[in-house]
Length: 525
Image (cartoon, rainbow, N blue to C red; front, side, top):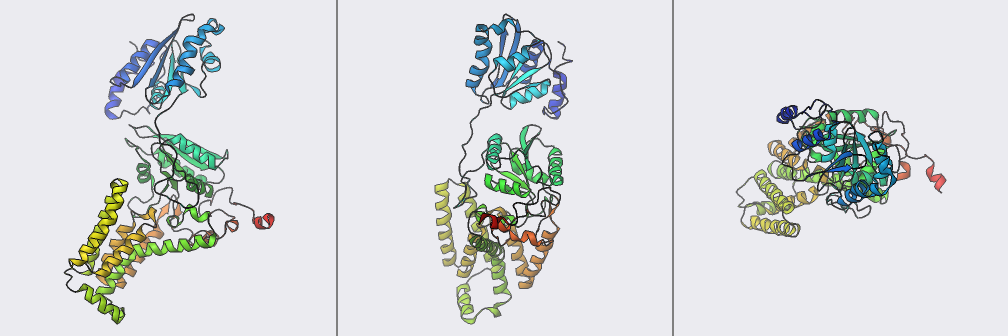
């Protein structure tokens, strides 16, 4: 059999050893239906979910092979909109006598197949990729063109409230694991033809669909180009979740601070896109990436924009205070007890001395014991079934804390410090992976030099933050470099009608910088 114009078994074996990716040079579809059948049987050998069916249009004597993956398609669509028109309705109509190899493509597309999305392909490897993506491919004897019909249907989770970003006021819908559902959720928020979705396939083995989302005319084209380039440069076997992409495209992979954001909420993603950011949607995960990602964003919440500006500003200040407490409080306690007891009021000093009597460990060992114990309890509460996990984390914390004090392992003030640290660590979830490491870093610095160690450690952290970039944008923007117009939406949120310009750090080269007219309040009133 001649495979010169179609799929070559030998070349496939060679490429299979190196990589089984189908994203290689194009292979023409053979005109021989027998060659196509042989190639499909070879490629999908030992694949019990692969289905193909031969159809012969008797009057025109044209053979067609229909191929798909069972479980990725809707059988009702295949039976009603593809098989029935070809096998039953065609015989009952006058079209059967008019069919020929010259016009069969147009006849199938315009008169016979009642499928909303039909496209043509001349690439055999591409047609195999369509089959693996849930399409039905029709190969026609004597033609180098195949028809690709959209009939995807697989089990998916319905749209519901997100688990990680709970709000009191605002939309309660979250992204799901299906790419097309996620893009539709964004379309519902932004009904604008300038909202663009650019598709790309990543993963040599998984061939995962990824979509780049931005608003043309608002997003900085330089940032969009950087995102395209970094995604196209990804050469990896598998992309199973957006976290793979995050690690491969971030500017500073060894930094503790994330430079790529993620969210489960369509309203948050839409708001960031409207500011000029770029979203990266990965099939198979409800977490959508957004870039650039700035340091100030973990302190912000979508609920801030749905409530009064005064309340939103107070809550943001509380979040910043909680971040400082979560990272610095254990270090502050160790420095206070070990280096600067003279600044403690005398009565409080007596109480602390009495509680520490008989404790065999130094303050830093106490802190590390309690911090590690809390992290273990937190991880156990997350991984266990929800009803059991909550009970284990709460009861475990109470029992361990009380038992540790009574047994003389830790002091009462240390339990209070750990409890405050644990509670405040939940207030800024996007920095959940950064805060514990910073806490230990500051703790060690405080144990060496006291307050001076904490100050020097924070200086090092701030210097590191100022050196970071997220897709070319300074990480501390708009605080460093200072941009007064962007300070309206940082630690303090001014009324929405006063934020009439998009963040300048994000749209330096964008076209549409204005959100609204400056005198909008006068016109409304």
